[in-house]
Image (cartoon, rainbow, N blue to C red; front, side, top):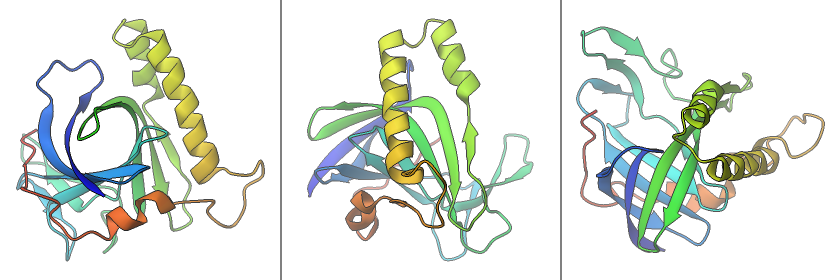
Length: 196
């Protein structure tokens, strides 16, 4: 394992991006963390420290959200994923564009997300329209979009849909590649708080 610095943002966002964030990388994956502002209510027994895992071969980021609810700018409280449950069981996976410079890694969100409950509820694919809009508006080159879709399908096939017919067990989810990173004590380094 080696220490890395991570910057994150959406594809097409101007620099500077959010970071540097403390991270740790293995051969196939990396984990990085950031703090959430006080308007986020953490789950019982959790802090506002959000850990994100990135599968480097597919460019997919995964997190098991640490927060139960968030207050918006008007003070309204909005429930998060699995808000009614004591522990979250739904992973959130994002398609990413990863620029790997070894000890420095830039991850940019490519809009497409999937919510993956591990308690038997169905998956929910999100934001395909935003992906299409980014292409239509010229914010995402075709070669980036086609490469991303191929990597996304590879992720789905390897981790969620291994066989043609659904089975009763997970092929590799949460991915084994993140187990060692998930076991690391927090924080991974100095905590940087997201102000968004």
